[in-house]
Image 1 (cartoon, rainbow, N blue to C red):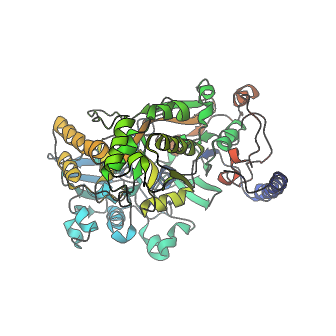
Image 2 (image 1 turned 90 degrees about the horizontal axis):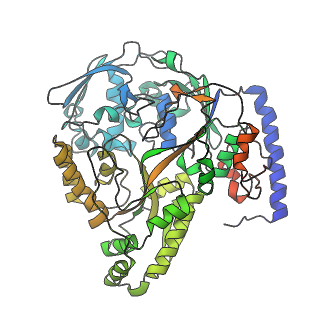
Image 3 (image 1 turned 30 degrees about the vertical axis):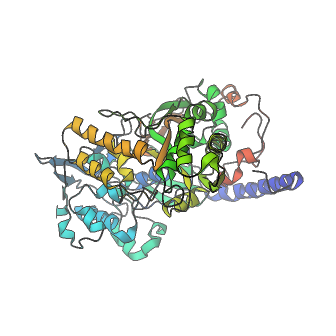
Length: 581
């Protein structure tokens, strides 16, 4: 994409922006203290409401300010006691009795009670809330029927406060991952009086009553989110950092440059790692961390749009994708090409999907009425703005034109537009990814059940739903795996509303000599309450030289270091840098 500005105009704009930001620096530095920790958090969050959050950038903030019955352990990402100090499980594993901490209070001093969980969970179940993750509660007796309007009687739902500090939850079937679901943001509690007072604007209340380890001080869109330690949190003694700023940065060049300058302490998010420099970065394990990741990169078909309502067309496109070329040429981080959808997990092995077979793909397209691509309508492949997503889109575009004779237009959109258009089925094909919400196969396959708010394909299959329901009602591990495999086979081989491309590898930046309390795990779950800065010493000049790898210098206002995705806060300068970043 070419800049709309000529070179002189662009340079003048850069100087004007630099002067503006320097002015902001002077103004901000007089009134606002520096944070103790600075984290680049990827994209701008869509929502900080636990009921309506949708992405990982949202989740990281939400889990810092709101908490549920359990919380994620920083080392293992498994569930551990949160606002519930303990629980009892019935012999048939269907009834959980949670004991709420008597010392748990909201950040304004109000006591936290079992009724807060009842009210918060029913708010998620309310169809008017439009919670994408409402399916997380469907394992509870009567919850799905309540959400679908089949019943309006809350007594029919298995959520009940026995007293101020005792919550009883009755499940439909034994659900081995239920405690991990209770740690997910959707099940975190929110403050009823604040929501009833302010309605949809409740997150703007200051001070905002929160239940988690940090208070939300401010949320400045496209700038930063500031968090401050909640002194009334039940585990405040083990919350290690006082003030944290999280910045939305979508450009790999900007993110890594800020890290090397010492202007960011941690960089989350696989999307802000420059793939062309992975070979160099991997040589520095003290501050570039690679790990196995419970995530899959794929694209969705909108099966309500012709000709993608024809499974032969979907199969043809899938079988003409050389996934090995994508991971070797574009991503370059050791990702595993995948014709399956569920990453390798304990007690489960995915069935085989469709192979790379261009000849068979051409036959299928001919059978669908488009020999050699003749008469095939131009269509769009949508992806959220990212250099690597664009590179993958270009590869797909070339493969389909070469092998099938069809033309796809590439549509790059901002994150919030991307989420909105996907939800409204305003796309033909859409770049997608899914990161496991908990360590069980169900977190991936449940996604494409007919009533799941995150399905976003228009695809519904009663047989698929049936296998999923049977699997989750089965206690036998092997039989459950067999049923889940049948469901996945429908998804990736028979019906194909999605096409998996590869299994993710995780990447994060932090200097182990300066930062403690960050632990790699397959969910990329890093509670900020455990993180602490050990030293203010910036990365040395020798370390910084890793960034200078025989590439032309770029200004942070150039295309390759898009300033629009960087925070405007004064800590981030706009002076040109040497080397690649």
